[in-house]
Image 1: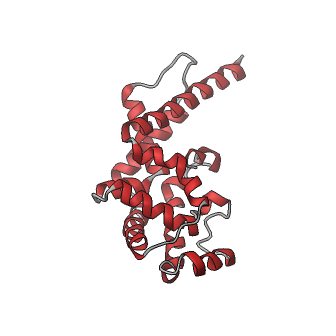
Image 2: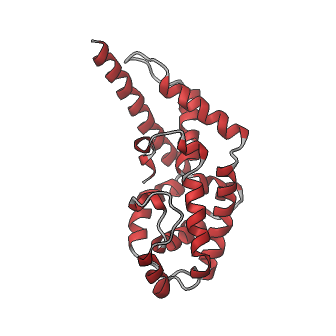
Image 3: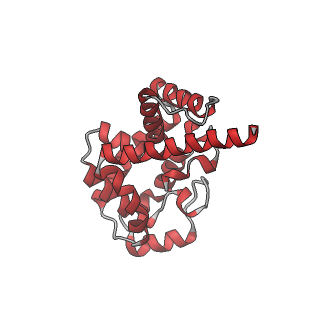
Length: 200
């Protein structure tokens, strides 16, 4: 019975997390809805413009800095999120409104830090989404294709850069390093890979 009870608790928390993700999508509208089509966009390699590169670098440099040095409120949110996930609960227990808010905020920090930064920097969401899709169609974020956070541009990517990403070529190594910094942040490293797959 103990094992069954534990499984039910984990199931309830899992359902709550899924509901939290859906709430994020509803609350933030197109910005998060775009996440579901971004991987499709990334497979359709686009020609990268200098404007794409400039905007992507602007946001990702700020996001990487925040990832390396999380704000105190970010650490507090993640700590509260861990507490919620690890707290023993009965199968009938639901998250409180405050806990739901913490879960939603934590998932955004873990899975969409660059988009949080873009919004705080008052970057138009559609412009950033377009720039991001173009850049990542040539240099996809490390986790999307399973390479891991190596910070390395592959030979195949260099070939793609020649034909589709000339404007990006001088910045390719920095882009990959920024991606690795953002998605390999101390906040994310405190969770297992399977716990972060909601991002893709």
